[in-house]
Amino acid sequence: MKKFAVGFIVLIVNSAYLAARADASPFYFASVALHLLLGVVLATAAAMRLAKHRGSRPPLAVLAMALLGAATVMGLVLMVVGATRPHQWLLDAHIACAVAGTLVLILQATLWARRLPPARDRTLLWAGLAVADMAIVVGVVLTVQDRSDAPHRDRILNPVDVPATMEGEGGGPKSPFFPSSAQTNVGGVIPANFFMTSAACGRCHTDIYAQWSASAHHFSSFNNQWYRKSIEYMQDVVGTRPSKWCAGCHDHAVFFNGRFDRPIKEQIDTPEAQAGLACTSCHSIVHVNSTMGQGDFTIEYPPLHDLAVSDNKLVTWAHDYLIRTDPEPHRRFGELAWLCTS
Image (cartoon, rainbow, N blue to C red):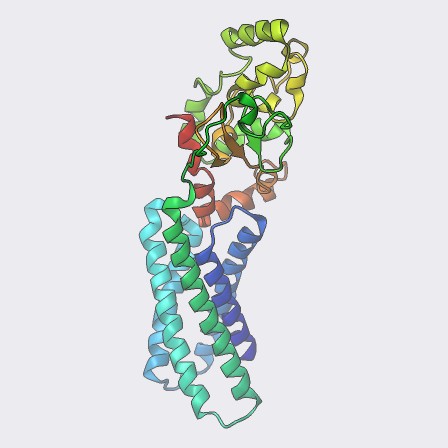
């Protein structure tokens, strides 16, 4: 019983974290996996215990079991169909039943704790209830704060004093991407393969990937002969650095890995030069600093990318499954993609 109680408290803390956050990080999705595992293990243990002990139970305990049982059934269904938009109602019902059942169970456990004689078990029960209550309160506060901050999270604020010259835009002349205002979250170059893996997105977004394959975004770089000749002529006349002003929007696979310091004629037939704009070119924009200059945005190289494009089929399956089970971080990560199409 003690192990079950500890597991249930861990599940409450885990659920509070998942409700309050939606991070596209390995830790968050490890927490999603833990949530699924704990839910299945605890539900199985509870079912086995109830089967062995069929005596009468307090009304509050019966109500808690009914609510948590319903939440478990809906959770198992969500593990199969995914918590995508068509099943949002099922996710909401799962959460509502789980929260209601947990609160009723905490109330029943409080009544049990008051009846226990002063001893170690009573102290542990009160401590567990305190942790559970604190997790619920903190989870609710952070969830409300996250929802209230959402309308302001991606607000674009232009500077009060407009830069008088190009040197005052973006990261300035010290940036490896100047004169483009584009930047990365690491402050420097990122691997070119980040912008060459759109086929991985096609595993789930089949129709959109097919549309992208024939789109202007796909043919925005040196696979577009008009653009190719423009940049080749520009570099012949004024050098490579000024052409970065164009590359910040057209040539991410070459540009963000630092290869635009070389004349493009020397690398025109490389896969990077022929990649165009990838899904990640727009969907990895995490901040827009201003509407000044040329492409004043920040691109983030997310740690989950390596899992999404792994050669290990088990790893990619786990990535896709967890995204489908909890798509909110994936959905949020691409919120600023509209900037590329508006």
